Length: 265
Image 1 (tube, rainbow, N blue to C red):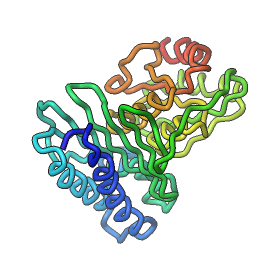
Image 2: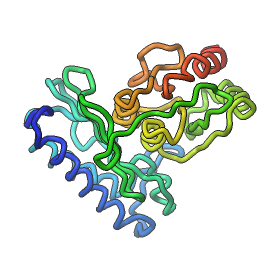
Image 3: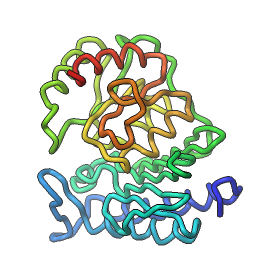
């Protein structure tokens, strides 16, 4: 079933909701021994693995022959016309501690270009998604905010939790933005941060150290909602470059200048 089929989006969204139902049932109820440490401050649970397998198995039926790039490596990536990029639980630390937001993030690339994406915030039951026509929240069109000045903007970010190589320039950026915005928020899920920028709840977002499955779907939704996405140098190496800035487009020049000056030292 190709992405331009009228049945594609409803069927994929239903698969994502089913994975979200599994996550919700175990939210705050993880049994002892079900949490593993992948590396310093980086955890995975049995539910991450189960949700990812659910998604991979079902999506393989939707689009036979497609490749997968997944956080928990349920399958290995290979070359194909279509590639699914999946994070079964974005916000695993929130999930472990019984907090929200917790998101399922799924995007689809066609020959290296994202053509479809969804972020499902499990706690609120909010499905953000985008296709060639636009961006939506639970079926209703969404758009980025109309904030025009960084000083008036509400921004989201993510704190470094294992990659501390750029901590000092990050903290310099954070300090500057504390004084020159209306506020900074750290929600614990990059997928949620990006979805909220797309819906106009946040005016911008920045973070470094992220992987493709953290940002692929959310960034696509931001772009289809009228926003702008780049790396800290203003280029397009944000999917694999492990740094991203996303905003409503109106504050991008000013926001980017702050990060380019400090994060690209």
